[in-house]
Image (tube, rainbow over all chains, first blue to last red; front, side, top):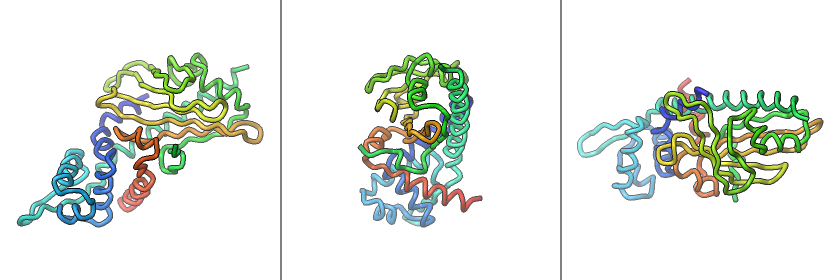
Length: 111
Length: 145
């Protein structure tokens, strides 16, 4: 049951990516590489303050990193931060396979 | 209602059991049988009913899975919410069981899908962007390997 411990670590990542707009911004950064808040705003189709807010959530989850250059802030994706999510999928995969084995054993015992 | 089973990238476990669907359905829906292979529970196969799976508490997890029955279609489909860590800060998923008669037994498919607070909306078909997202995720991880 150790797998159920893991989502605690994964929580900020899952939460950050639960929002469709944030997911879209993160995807765009993984696809296109580093981008300014301006170009992300054009892509996302929401206001710049909204984009900045989404980027802050992504930053807290360590999914993106930023740097300032003049008056522009550039963001890039840090896909390695997805590791807890990948761990989660693997761990729950093991959990369910184990339960399937137990179900199979139970079915043998049942009338 | 759109069906998260159409998302091929969520967690799916499948197996053919050499037993009839009726027997599988009992194992999935009778609380005492369910306890023998899943966890202790107060499950009842009634849509809208809240129930819990309970295991021994451990560090970082109180041992409780908070669930709510979503779909009960006898011998065919069973679905429930699966939440760990409490309603506020925890994670929410949908577990969907699908039974299909197969040669010599029953094909059982378990799918766990949906993350985070918008998960219920996702289940209802709005903004179900995970398929696309996981496609991208796999590509990104592939590039990293």
